[in-house]
Length: 122
Image 1 (cartoon, rainbow, N blue to C red):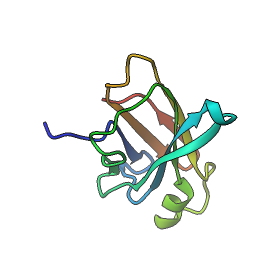
Image 2: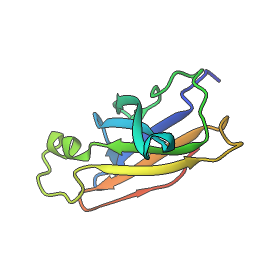
Image 3: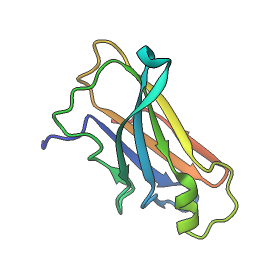
């Protein structure tokens, strides 16, 4: 298997059963030494399959901590002509536990205009 980013994501528009294409995504880590501020790690845009597999270089070593992934859903809804929606962006906060830094983290987002669901993917 080819090397991949240690953190990847996927957006699925569950209201129509299609990938969430061209969704801007930002990945950050919580810096507890700097008054709990968020530090940017990477940005990307979902591809035609709704995925971002290149957020971080495959050689990037994760550190234990709290991470936040922000999906700019308002831009997605505008691109598909949806004007009524509830969440202009979705933030998913997750933890990389001590001892689990070498694991892969896949963050799926199942999206509809008035709700979303997420889970730890594989």
